[in-house]
Every structure is written in structure tokens, then in C-alpha cells.
Image 1 (cartoon, helix red, strand yellow):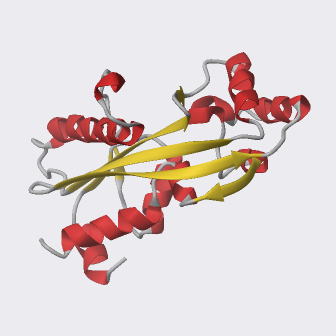
Image 2 (cartoon, rainbow, N blue to C red; image 1 turned 90 degrees about the vertical axis):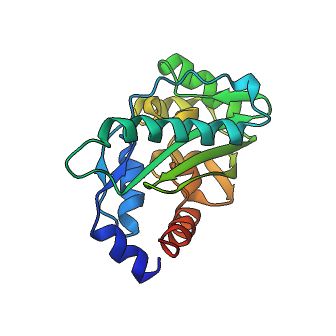
Image 3 (tube, rainbow, N blue to C red; image 1 turned 90 degrees about the horizontal axis):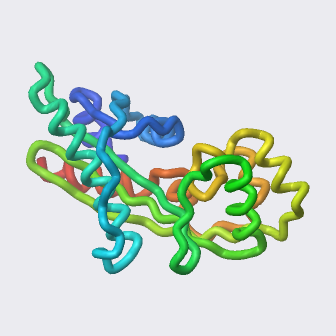
Length: 205
């Protein structure tokens, strides 16, 4: 990141509108100290009204940010920047959310085995005068997994709170044969594009 951007963010209140530890860790890689305020937005957007998954997921991030902004804007020190993101795993027209239980996780991971799928993360950045939303897509190819491998991974407990039933940064990385694109998109916060957009915002303020 550019030094003026870091200086601007260090001196102000920055909010991460997500309870994801992974997103918080990625934000910290930029040297940003963000306050974690998970959004309470009810995810009730109509997917059928969107032309593609990317536009849907970036709007989901936008509304999550807006909910946090509305909640905090009357604080004694209002947020200077709110960062929000949401991630989905897709294969064709199918959307893979978080598994409901271990049985659902096994079904999900088995269907992804030896196939390529796409992970999309939508991001929204909001200041008092600016709002930027965008999405990044990354292709992920699982290896040829055995039933025993999948069940061993599920027993780790890592899969149940993650879209698609796996985490690339943990044991789930052992399921992946290759990644085509930004691996941080798969983790839930595309790092390069986040830095680029923040630099663009703060070069004009």
C-alpha cells in the first residue's frame, strides 16, 4: 500500500463489518487496525434479479456495510471507513453455502472432488463521501479425493463454518490441486484489489 493511505487509516476509525477471523487477519496484513463489528443484515436478496453471481455477492457486501454504517454513524467517533465482504462457492448454476452438518459437508465436498469450481468474493468499501463495490473470482480445482480423505477432513471440524465446506488456508488446502487467481479471494478478502481500491480512494480525499 502507499504510505499516505496507511497514515490516513491509522489515524481514523476503521470498521470490518465481518466476524470472520480470516478477513481480520488479511486486513491486518495491510497494517490496518480494524475494529470488528459483524453485520446484522438479513441476507434476503433475490438472486434471480441479478445477471450473475458476482453482482449479487457484491451487493450482499454493500448491504452488510450499510447496516453497520447506519448502526454506528451516530457514535461519538463515527467510522471513517467500513470494509465489508461476502464469499460464495459456485459450480455452474449451483451455489455452495456453509454445510448444515457433517453429512451435508460430505455430500458437498464429494461433488467438488476432481472438478473445477469458482469462488467469488464481493467487497464494499464505504467512507462518508465514497462507496466502492466490486468482486473478484478465482478458479479452484480439487484433486481426486477418496471417501476416507473427505471424512478425515470433516472430522477436523474446519469445514462447517466455511462456504463450500473447506478453508484453503487450513487443512482444506490439502484438497486443492491448483488455484487459478488470487488465493486471498478464496480466503474471503482479495488482498491485491483491496489495497488498490483503498489507494484509489485515499489519493482523492
